[in-house]
Length: 255
Length: 248
Image 1 (cartoon, rainbow over the protein chains, first blue to last red):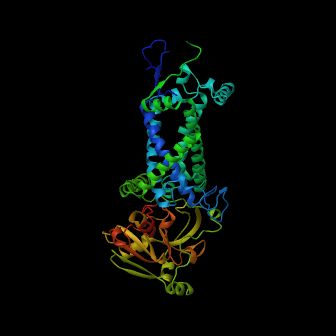
Image 2 (cartoon, chains in turn brown, red; image 1 turned 135 degrees about the vertical axis):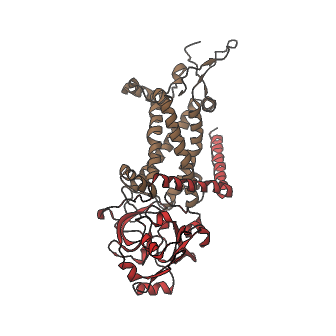
Image 3 (tube, rainbow over the protein chains, first blue to last red; image 1 turned 90 degrees about the vertical axis):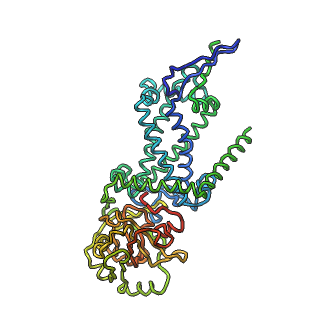
C-alpha cells in the first residue's frame, strides 16, 4: 500500500514498556490528492450516471438500439431509486450537467495521475505485480489470506499484496480509461472527431453498454475497497490517505 | 452497532443527496456547471476539424424501425391540410440577416441537388437509430439567400408545439455550413413521413436528437440567441435547461 519509497520511516521514541509505534510514509501527495478528488467525483459520476440511465433503462449491443430493437438488459419504468441518483428526482438535464461537468475532473485527474505515476516510478515500483507474485500458488495464498481476514504485519504491510496490485492496476489502467473512452464514444461530436472510437467499441450502443458495465465494476471495486478499509483498521488507513503516514502493524511474534 | 452504523450511513447519504439537490437548485452552482458546457464545446471543436464527418453507415445498418420522438403529428388544421395535400403548398421561408429573403416552394426544394447520408441519430435519453436521409445542404440555401456578415446563428422555426409552446432550434455557423448539415425531405428512400418531421427536418449530425428540428417552416439568421423565444436557443434549452451545445 505504499507508493512512497517507504524509506522515510521514523520511529517514535520508545516509551516505557510500550512497544515502539513505527510510522511509514506510504502515500505520496499525487496519490492522496487524486484519491480524495475521486472519492467525490466518482460518486457524483455514478449517481448522476444512474439518473441518466433512468431516462432509457435499456442496453443494446451494436451501432443502434431503441425501443423497437432487442436490448440485452432492460428494466420497466425508472429502476434506480432517488436515494441513488443526482438529482434525487427525475431530471435528465440537471443530471447531464452534473455528469458532463464532473467528467472533466475525472478525465484530468486520471490523466495527471497516470502521467505522475509513470514518471515517478509509482506504477512500475508499487503497482506492477512482480513475476513471482503472479504464480498461481502465491495468488491463491493471497486469496486465502483475504478470506481469513489475515492482514499483513510489519514490513509486508508496506507493500501492496498481489490482489491489491491486480485490482488497482485494473481500475487505474483499464476500468477508468474504458469509462472515459466509452463516454467519448457516446458523444456524436467525438465520434466525428475521432472515428476510431466507434471501431474500438463496435458501435455507440455497445459503448453505452460497456460504459454501464464498467460503472458497475467500479461500484463493486468501491464496495470491496471500503470493506477492506473497515476491516484493516479505518483510522490508520484513512489517516495514511490524508497525511501519507501509516502506522505499521506490529508483528505479534516479536516482543 | 449495526443499526447505528446504518443510521449514520442513511443519514449521511440523505445529507449528501439533500446537498446535491440544493446545489442543483442553486443558481451560482448551475452557472459553474454551465461553464463546463462551453469548455466541452470549445474542446470538442479544438480536437475536431471543422468539417469532420459523422460516420456514415451501410444500408444493412439501418434501424428496422426509426423511432419517432417528440411530436408525431403537429396539431392544427393548417398542418393537417398541408399533410393532406402532400405538402405541395408548403413553403420554406428564409429570412433574418440575409441579403435576399427567400420563400422556397417544396417542389423547388426537392429539385435542388441533394445529399444522401446514412447516419446515426442519438437521443439525449440514450437510444440510437440509424436512418438514410435525403436533403439539400443548408449551406446551399444560405449561400443563395446571401448570409449577412452579422449573422452568427441559424434558427429553425417549426410547425409543432409542445405544451402550447412552439418548437424551435438553433445552430451556429460552423454546424450550419458543415457538409452533412442538410434540410432532409426524404428518409429511407421515401418522402419524409409525418412522424419523422414532414415535409422538412434538420439533420445536424454531430449533435443530439433534440437539435434535429422537425416540421421546419422558416429559417432565420440572427446575431444573438437572445432574439429568439426564451433566448437559450431551443425549445428544450428554454423549457428544460438542456444544453444548447448538444455534441455530447
